[in-house]
Length: 205
Length: 205
DNA sequence: CAAAGCAGACCGAACATTCTGTTTTTAATA
DNA sequence: TATTAAAAACAGAATGTTCGGTCTGCTTTG
Image 1: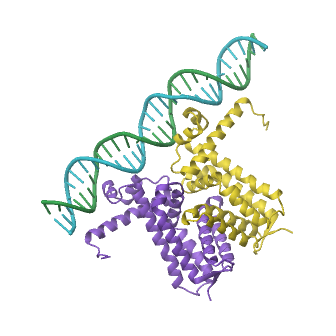
Image 2: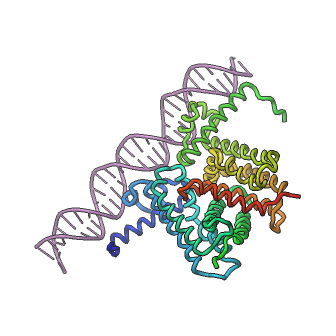
Image 3: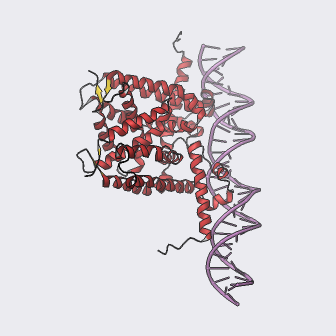
């Protein structure tokens, strides 16, 4: 594993890929997965068709890499919340949940990721590409939490279960928006939910 | 409001629409919203293009009507749970939530509905058609619950808030499937969640 | 016989992908 | 260090398919 330091070529390639994936994210977030075409991503990224095709030979490859990047980007915030600003707010779990909503889920990246998640429910090819990373990401996320918290239930993996529940609710909240006219309602739901959960996910002693 | 009893023509038209919408539901459930085309719906419904076009001049009209039907179909189960099988199971709220998952959400209809919900997050035209019905459906659903239950929190609409949280979680659960390898895990999450919620949504005395 | 229901061909637009060139970068050689 | 051939990065046209929507007829119903 030489981990050869990146050449000028690699740097440009990485910059190009990042640019294209960023365009893909904003497209998916604003237009939805169904209306996101290669043409539109290309246009939004300000990149020629040849360049895009060179780095991502198929649409699936582009979506897959975009999803991977979103996945790895979403892993950071939880870790940073783990180390940073302890005991600053009301409750660590409450803070974690509220931050997960505002800083991770309810962002262009978070919304785009949910779009891709929904897409790979029915797109088996896409799912096959992402499945492994989704599972390991999930396992790591759950392990991080289990390391710090313990659940109020009987099962020994109760903290993991509760954290999965939290993430599931937060993702669902993105979809619930269309049901209510007042956007403030989502914040109220989030607060109420976090208030309930903080008495079940307890800091390890 | 004459509510003229349906003629033979109307009956046939209704049957045709039902058939097409059913095909749309199974398409959206199995292929996802992005891969659902008029051609495929037509093929699955075993209907000619002319017939389909006659009843639904545009794709949006078809999706909108399909969503309406799903919405009205999803209103029933909650009502039936309200009247039927009281005190049969562990807890009325627990039963209600578990039934909402197995009988409403985790069905072809439920999954298709979520697909449409996700789609109309970014499709403003579709949302404009559905918004009114989504809001009133939501209001009715919440009213039904508030009529029977009271929340553990301070707010006077706490039961409504909690019920919205429940529905949001259940919808999110449909998406969470791709994160875990064991499908049984979803059931565990559902049970744990319902167990928590039953101590916050309380039967009115 | 008028009108609605139905059948299927047809249309331009947009799609993902493939392709032929052109430019730039890399690495090997002198 | 200068030269050069190969490889990679890019540009953009061309291709065949599929899309949603329209249009022209035929059939059934009222």
